Image (cartoon, rainbow, N blue to C red; front, side, top):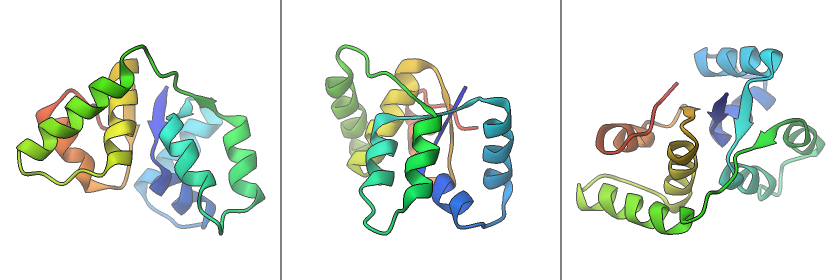
Length: 124
């Protein structure tokens, strides 16, 4: 399984091309794509999202949040910020869910490089 960031899902649904979209298409065909809870929230909170988003989310599994998740996510975000790197709350939540479940992340967002460099996030 590989977790998919919202930016990749949005690119896929918009019909855009690129290596991450191609990877998502392959993951969907193999049944290997999974979403973090924060990604589900991000995708559904876009007022422009339509039925396609809902259908895609319904077809995919969601990573579980493990006991202590919220604390670990807070500590992870603090680690990244102490290093002077950029980190949004949603990114820290997504990274921590992937780390907890030992799942790689497929993303187009370079900000996740900080989580790979300073923590144990694996990027696909």
